[in-house]
Image (cartoon, rainbow, N blue to C red; front, side, top):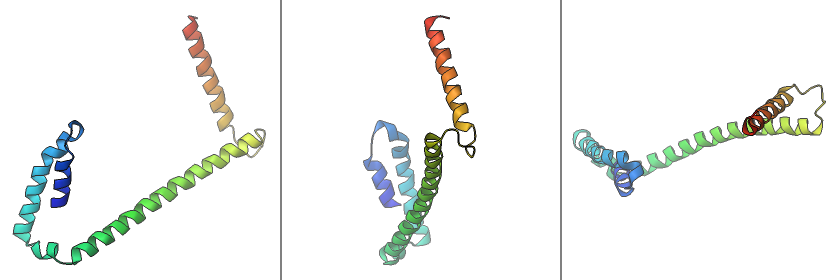
Length: 118
């Protein structure tokens, strides 16, 4: 907590003014935990490094799973567009893409008419 508060204080700037103002509160809370709970032994022990390492591994795994999920959806969408581009009259492909193309053309036509004063 002390390291996080120090990092926040070092990042001074107009965009993160709120975070910098909370850093003092954050540091005070960290000091209170050390005094009341007696975290000095934990902070000074080797368990902290192990805990931090395992936390990083867990968070990395969660982020990797999130990225794999998003990549799967993007790949499915890309395959759909490639299949449509290869054969637009394929009966297995629904009318989503042609409907969207028509909608975009209508919007473009209405914008061009509006700019011409019709």
